[in-house]
Image 1 (tube, rainbow, N blue to C red):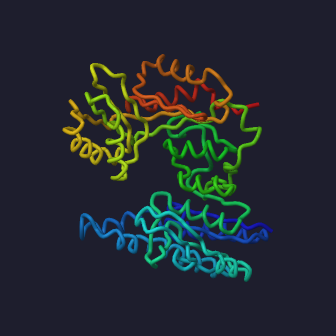
Image 2: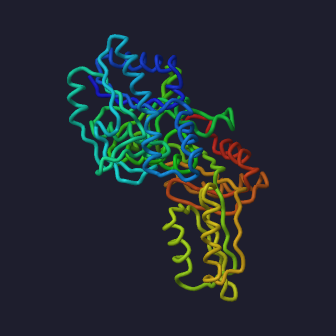
Image 3: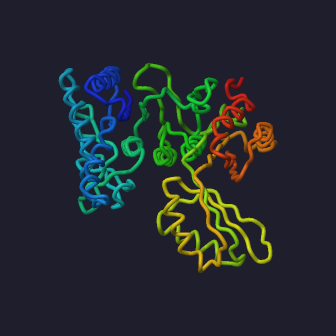
Length: 407
């Protein structure tokens, strides 16, 4: 007997027929003698619908009340799934985040999990119940309902699996695993049977939408084995787990692309200590996440600083930099969202030389100019013009022969 946590996203529970399909999968897992905890999202589109209602009333609705509102989407789903399981002859018990409780900080809309009280869940599991948990939501120390932000149900599932010391966390979604790149960009994309936490973390942070970064961080920290698989097929998925020897054969394992990036350039600022600190401290205070940074060499006491940030934060970032323009004695501040970040990722890059040269040469042969470069032990990222994004992905996927499984 194993303890298995399963998570189903919004498309998997989009209507009553799909909820019934989920119930059958859950029941099949239970029938094999396993204890099962199911974490579900709201029905597809429901969270956006609820947010739309709030914004019809106020363009900037109170964040606490927004969390109260949008958390109801998951409450509907857990009740419907529990009712479905009961109608099939299984004992089921639903839990909202505050009923567990899944405790978070008080950052409405992007709360972080601080604790999970597992006693009630364990008691119901021992009594033979299938536990159905509302993903995406929790409760702070003051008793306020909170939500975990983008990918929150993935995070809920992995956090619950960690708290219960589950044997496995299965993330069911509308894709059947983690691929070497987006199959919508190239038909040569190949499913990866097993991938290390570190690689998955880089993929999640660099634009892959299969698993969200906070969920991977949780899995890595608590060593929760995670399988990504489809809720619509019985295909084998991708196991996300600790690094082992058979993961080291390939220098590059995947190519990612993020077109939701923007770039800001501050031209002609004084080249002296404290300038970068002033800029990036103010951006951080405004919760603007900066990724890649380049500072040109000084010329006549002046320099240019460029950095990337999420496209959604471009307007805010430009406003902050414009407020600083006079203090920085900057000549010009410009921004663009017409960029893409293309990255190659692989644990084997640590011990393989020439990977960067191979990447840059392949892009150059296609006439793709590189505007910025960022590296780590297991990834290389390049900022390029957005119009070349898909060409770059296909080119790199081919040159590193990612369609071929390693021997």
